[in-house]
Length: 310
View 1 (cartoon, rainbow, N blue to C red):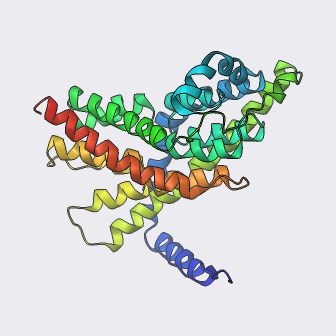
View 2 (tube, rainbow, N blue to C red):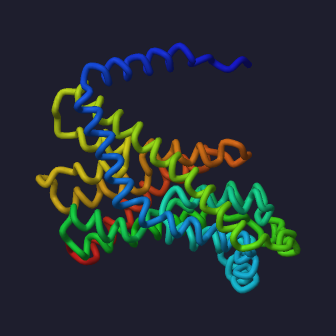
């Protein structure tokens, strides 16, 4: 069966975007500046050092050493290899799209199998905890609700991990061959990690700028309505959360934030696709995981709010 050729459609869309850029340059410039400001003041300072350090840890075989300690628990709870623990823990600390990054890194190092990678990509989509406790708190202005968002968002992923885990222990082959390799000199490893991280940062920045611009164009095309913020959030998560209207109730604000965090926005989906494009990791696993996470996290939050009578 021949694949459909969407090149003409893409060309038409790109020309339309170019026309909007020429007609509304001020709007576009403001959107690009907003994307740059958000990236340089919030995202880059928070994750750039973490990405470099984790890349160094991978090159110095820390995942294997962690696996030897946590192997028993990952086998018992997730029926998975101990190397998976490194990806799960670091993706929780770094925030998205680090789950895809670390999964791809360890797959390339042959520390996890392809089956493990396709399993991990489904549930290692975590927002940076500082983003939830900081930016999301500024929206809700309620510490208890913000903590409820954090717990619901994280717990939903672990529920997915348990539900879809391999049926039997030991079904995922272990590979610790890289532990036999001699590490490169530190300065060489550090330089490689810096360049590698900068490439990733540029990809994330470029993607964010594109979707900030698209959201700006969307605001021009569509008439002003009460759901602009929702469409914006589906395109670009950070901007969507920042534009949630104050007139929404606290409960509705929390629900919208959880939807944005769990689904991840099209911008983050594009980042994940860029990271896994040269692998056999299935994007559909990531997509299905985000849909399930959105539903489960909202349900958990409702139970959390009901139990506290919020």
